[in-house]
Image (tube, rainbow, N blue to C red; front, side, top):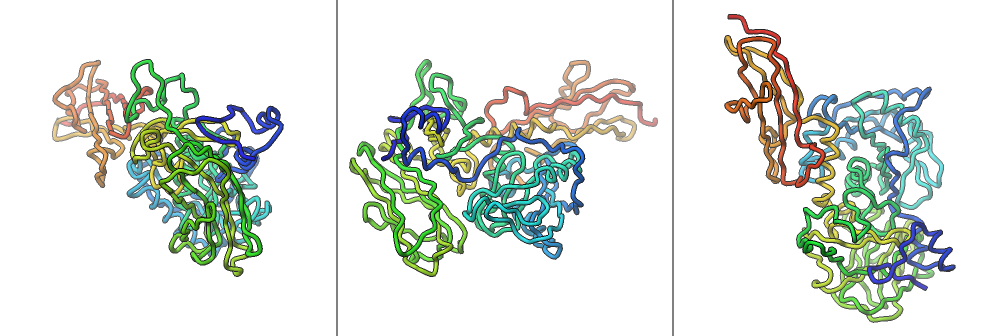
Length: 527
């Protein structure tokens, strides 16, 4: 039995319990949602204040520093599961991750607002716990089972005390587990592993939860909120200013036509004695379909066959992956016939038994390009289906790392949200200093190095506008200059205003992209 999850048939319920109480039955689409992928805990669930808890000893190393912590957003990697002799490995792991997310992609354009630090504390045991049992480590990271998904912490009070002990040098703590495989957690404490293949992508995704903050865009989650979530089609689209084809005044937005007849977080260990199979029902009314799944513990294409209705889908593992987990998409530009279909995963290599695992499988069906636009960089209203089979809407098909963890970048909506979240915590103005140029008194403003003050130019168009004023009157000749020559008399108060403009932010209702600072001149220069 299978309930269709889609724009044409869905149950708008607040919880799985509500659905079961109404229907009295389960289904693949609903019942298999009970375990989402990388979990997300609400940022407001916890704080960093833990009275009476001593922080662990921290050896703090700068990784990428853009300015003073008093006016930057500080991200700190805290070590977990690293022995004393693995200190250097921790620093290398943390630096690799910081550089990956902040250079050339994802957080590159906002990097001048960020500082990255490493805070090392040796653990008594190496690695992270499994089966719900933490090891003897600083923050007690562990996997609930053996599958490659969420990594949780057993000692939030220690993490809170560690971050709090750093004062304004710790805004977003990242607990880095010494484990080579996929896993993480979003929310108040971002958790990631040192996986070479997956660590950077998981970090980007989880920081999206923690910083912007937004919920999920992939199907089967529980939290859909933030700038990229839309729930009521009778209300204005939150990202209306980004829509590629805005609706006419008074018209409802067009919803892209899709359906999800199967979503199964199987977490099933594969064996050669019996294939893993499941069935789903298609209405036969859609033009295209996608088979999406993730696997771990499989090294070669000869290890496994993946079939849909007996047709080999030609699965090939990601090169260099090893036994780590990866997500795969098989897009098929033809329609599924109406009726029941079967997906089959057959393990062929007995040597992989005990490590080969099917993590999840999903089937999506789409209308043709007139009904469902797959063009990259198209912004519209795309349906997403939750754990309770409740429909919400996202801005793009698959252009966002909050939708696909293997995608490198945020969509424009999330990126705009990132700018607002970060700039709400800092001032564009680092400070104003007083000096003399010969006999003339000067005021100089120092700005966060964006726009024309960046060390490395970026592709998006951006600019600063700088204005100086006294008693509310703009001093025109010093517009866009960082240094002002002031009147000879001391005691005057001047105001400098910095306005930042970037093509990555179209709407600034809260005024996050404008800051001002007043300065009173103390005296004249020596004559």
